[in-house]
Image 1 (cartoon, one colour):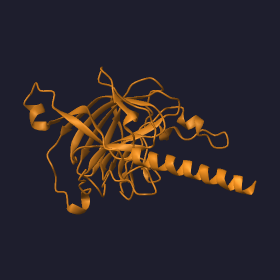
Image 2 (cartoon, rainbow, N blue to C red; image 1 turned 90 degrees about the vertical axis):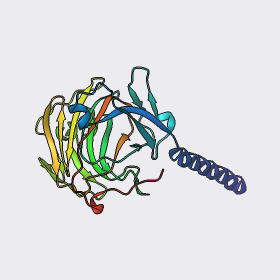
Image 3 (cartoon, rainbow, N blue to C red; image 1 turned 90 degrees about the horizontal axis):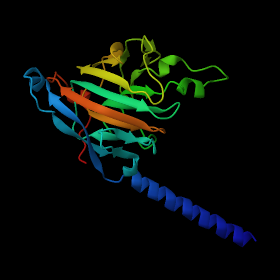
Image 4 (cartoon, one colour; image 1 turned 135 degrees about the vertical axis):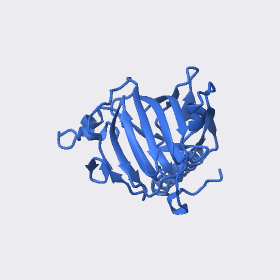
Length: 258
């Protein structure tokens, strides 16, 4: 009986090991996809009729099955596993427009700006400045002792993560909260307009600037789209690249060679 138990335990352990190895491999599989466009300020001011260059996104630690671009140009992320994909190139000063909607109550996601796109071993998420995207019911689903979380969580918090330090415009601890809740709920499209210049980020939610940070210790790096447990859709992702500033090596995320 003991031998049978040991054998069953060994077989189960082996199965878990195989599953773990397979998941680890999948999360580091190489894949990329096209989504969104990028253009320069000069082209915008010149009134160029071109749509801009197509943006390429590269997997960091998710799975190919978790991302798909529909025929209507909507990028669908299934939310599993937790991790990110990154932009092909780094960005310093830029204007970003994106529309997003959660498809599940309490959904969680976001965008990382100025990121190294290289999560540490103990976390699936990278460094950078996180621009939060939470569905409205998150505060209720994650209530503590029956008390809902502050609504500040859901409507565009911005803060430095993974060792990146920022000064919050509207402090909630180290984070910056929006001064007005403008987020829409499950199934409804939200619009974020992000202006990032010289370590300063200003965020407009659905047509009004309501939040921001300054003095970011890292102000050039990759953009990352976050997969964090719930289905989310993105569309109309557009970047206008602005002129560079005086940015030191220490203020720039390391370049990746993959």
